[in-house]
Every structure is written in C-alpha cells, then in structure tokens.
Image 1 (cartoon, rainbow, N blue to C red):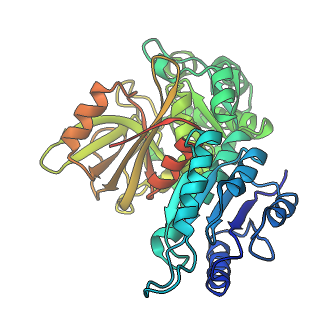
Image 2 (image 1 turned 180 degrees about the vertical axis):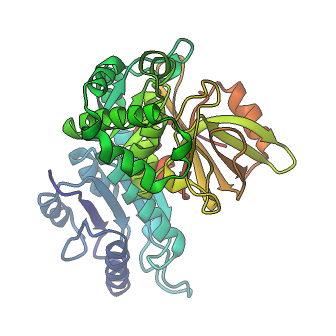
Length: 446
C-alpha cells in the first residue's frame, strides 16, 4: 500500500520581495509538518514553470496544498490541475507588511488567477483558506483538509459487508454495490444472516467460552441473563468476528429483527456493540449507509460512534434524544453506571446493552443520506452530549444542538432524512464537510 502524500506546492514569480516570501515559505513548511508526517516539500520556492514541473515530476499526491507564495499567473495552477485529480486546498498568504511601500507578495491576486483557472478544471471543487502560517484558522483548515483527504483514501479502500436484507419499510439503508463503489470507492459484499446463524449453531460451548468471558469482563448484569442466551451470544459473536476478520471487513450492516429472535433465539445487539468497540463499524437493521457513516466518524476520532434514531425532542433544553435497542459500544457508557446489559425492550430477550452514554462537550451528528434520485448527501449537526441517564430501555444519548432543536427536527423531517444517525464523539464537522466537497456530494449543515 502506497504511503499517503500531502504535497505542498508554493508557486510564485521572482519579481516580488523574495526575502519576505522565503520567510513565509519556511513558516509554511513548519506548519504543515506540525499537522502531518506525510508531507512532501520542494527544496525551494517554485518561481518558474520549469521549477514547478520539475517538482511535480517527483510527487504522487493524495492532497495538494497549493499556495501563492507570491503572485503567479494562471499557468501555474493549470499545470498542477492538468496533472493531478486529487483534492486541492488553495492557500493565500496575508501581506506581511502594509506600510505604504512595496507590495511584497501580492498573493491574493495570484489566488484569483488560480481560482479562475481551477474553476475550469474542477468546476469550482476545491477548498480555500486566507491567512498566514501561524494563524489558528489556517492551521485548522489545513488539518481538516489533510484529515478529510486521508479519510477519502481510507474509504476508497474500505471493504464493507451487508449481512442480510433490510426489513420491510427499512429500504432506506439498502445499498447497491455499484453505487457504493462509484460514489465512495467502497467494495460491498453480501452474505445472508442465516449463514452466520448456521455457523454459530455448529460451534461447541467450549469453543465460545472466551467470547462470553469478554462480554462479562466489560459489562455488568450478565447474571440476570439466562445461560442459554449467554451461550447464544457467544456463538454468534464468534461467527461474526471470524467472518469479519477473515474477510478483512472494516464496516458492516446487519439484519437483526425478527430473525435473531425467531430463528436463533438471541439478539445480535450485544455482538454489534462489542464489534464497534473493536473498531469495526457495525450498524443494525441492515442500514449500510448508516454503517458507512459510523465508519467515517470512527476513522476521524479513533473511537466508537453511537448509532440510533432521533426519538425525543425537548424544545426548552434544545435537545434531541438519540436511542436504539441496545447496540452502543461499551466504551460509550456513562462512567456513573458503566456498561450494563439487559433485554430487548420489545422481545424481552437478552443480552442487549442498557445504559445512557457519556457526556462530551462536542459531538457531530452525521448521516450519509441517499436522495430519491439516487444521489447522495451528507447531514451534519454540531452539538453537545449532555450528562443524562438512560432515557428509555436500550441505549441513548441526549444531544444539545447548536441551533434550536425544534428547527433541526422540523427541517430534517421535511427534507426527508433517514431515521438513523451516527453521533460522533468530537467536532469533525469541518472534515466531513470537506470530504463531501471532495466526493462531489451535497452537504447539509443544520
């Protein structure tokens, strides 16, 4: 696998104040190095087309940081754009001195020349930032750009699985392999849930004891679950885990009801929770786009992501409660209660997870959505996870929204969003917004 590469390309001409430009050049490299270990840099500023082409011959970038170190005409940006199809951040430098004397860089005029050319090559699909290397907003933008590009590469190499079909009326989560490959670069394979159920039934109890001990080690309340259901959990956990690892699956969606209650006798909820804590994004009710949403959040934060339905609105608090039957990762449990297990609220069979999720000052509610015409869009909502107990049987998290929650609910329902969302622990809105632009998707911020 080739190493990810972020290429810094400082373009300009030698007729401006090169002493000032050199200072910005060196500071820019230090800033990028503080953000990523995967940067590649020219030995000097690229002040001619010959210098530019010579450097471009040496790189194979996944993301480009194209900076007007001084003014440069549109031929420079055109040369970059005709060679590479990867995402581009256009960076304009602030004039270092305004003293009534010489214009030292004229970077902003260069940015207009570059942007005009890039409109022709990319139809305007590039990111932009204005400011000096030491400015925090510049550092944040570059970091978000690099992280989004890294995620785009990872998603393009992702292998997902769809375990079983969506129940009737849940078709919003049913994905086509061609759509996933064409839009995201994701390889999607399918397997029937009964295949994993059959595998699970053929294991001996002895083969599965370590899987049950894993659950008991990190949860409370297993003594209240019938032994037959605990063994049923261990069997199906082993079946899922082995299938996913053996087939290099990084994210998957799984059918759950009614099959695991009627044909198997034990829910799959706790299995999905355990796999989420392993770093394998696991969405229930066979929602493949939901699982993909989880994967993106998990890759950005390197931690588990909550997956659930918006089930309650409090206009006074400006909160939305997200809930599901009991699939939340144990690492998301409130420290006050820990990760408890219980029974499914409707079927009264366990083990499922039973807890309120831990608080966080910043969360991002996210969804990869599919519109009626088949195109994709991204849902983004910033908020805060409050320190609230379990709201209903199952697992829940209460999110205080940045904008009035009533407006968020009214707008998102009227705009036809699916009823499953990922609640990502961390502020990754900018990264996901940039990723949407990279993929040519509509981005909807609430």
